[in-house]
Image (cartoon, rainbow, N blue to C red; front, side):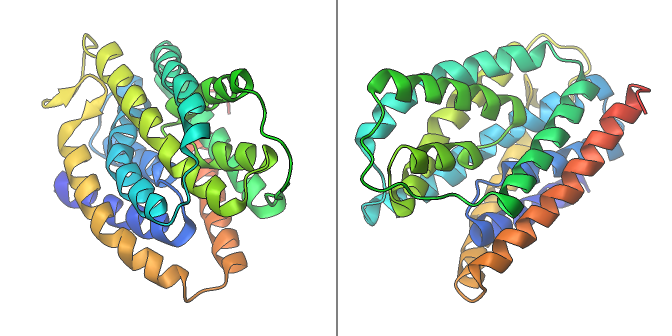
Length: 270
């Protein structure tokens, strides 16, 4: 039955990824937290297992996404090359930091992160700053480090952070989105590897998990999301962009609020 839930979560995440242009992490992590909670996994590992598994699934979606964007000339590989260095370092550090955070606290932090992204999507539109000179390579590496660390902690591909940075840096929106999609790959690879490594000696992990990566969950979610992302992308061309953005923002408000509430309640803060 758990496989059915994994497939359902992957299908929904894929539709959202296609509809809203995201990697799906902000959908997959809450879904996995709810699934693992329903199956009575230890609260100590639920959030970590959800984040690690989410990052692993983003490897697949980011490869598909960056390939599509690259065919249309939407990836600035010169910018990606600089940012990737920081993204890898930051993602590994993020996995190390997350491993030290209590499971319920990590869950609450993920909820708070979802609420911040929702607020940004609903009230703070990205603005292009065309003609602006690109920041220096060290600035790009530094930005990648910060984005990678935050993305690894929250289990996301980093698009909600990378796109605003790249538009601020002077890239047109099309290139910002395409380059952001490419940036999701080093985040996912390094982040998933970090969670698998740092979680390898943790007790109470389910059978078949590699550290904090649930292998069956990874396979099922990746398979389902890969198929349904095309359906979401088709619908995206039939619905107004503003409506899509508001819809995703509201979805994140609901998911983020629930995660924040359950995490704080579990720690007896509320």
